[in-house]
View 1: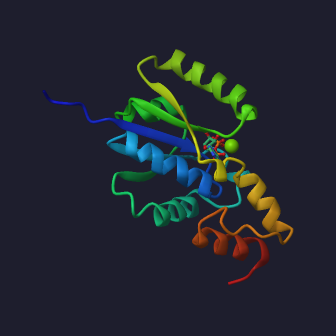
View 2: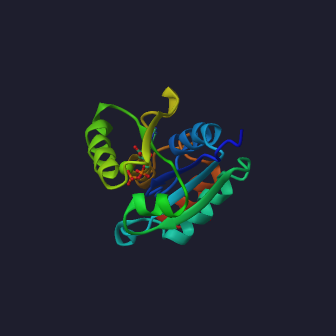
Length: 165
Ligand SMILES: Nc1ncnc2c1ncn2[C@@H]1O[C@H](COP(=O)(O)OP(=O)(O)O)[C@@H](O)[C@H]1O
Ligand SMILES: [Mg+2]
């Protein structure tokens, strides 16, 4: 029997990548033969890091996962997923607060492309409270974010927000 190569897409803003995202990526990379991280390109104006910077930061922290690729897209997520030959969309759930929006999106995406299934993964509990937004707020006010983002990302955040090297 020839088994099908399972391709999954994990979309998001990743502004910047956190250890919560990374935990979801590691789990998804075990489920799929090939995982494509897709950075959404439409909200560049309000982001701290450009898409090119985010791609670079992501690539740096997934080098140990050989079946993970980093890409970007605009337009409809399901069309990007279909063009990549993906049968799954991966999303992360932290708490009940994520559920409503994620459910809405998953059902809309199912309506657009019924053959693509959304799969929700929970990060380990140590990472479940982490969000890019909160990490940026804490570091902006001088708080300690070590352990919440990869070290390479922490130094880029410091540089961007405090002008440190
Ligand atoms: N700490 C975390 N644990 C589990 N899932 C997470 C965590 N942080 C983010 N996610 C999930 O990762 C995905 C991408 O998040 P994000 O970069 O904020 O992009 P988006 O703008 O699409 O929400 C979303 O499904 C989000 O719920
Ligand atoms: Mg988000």
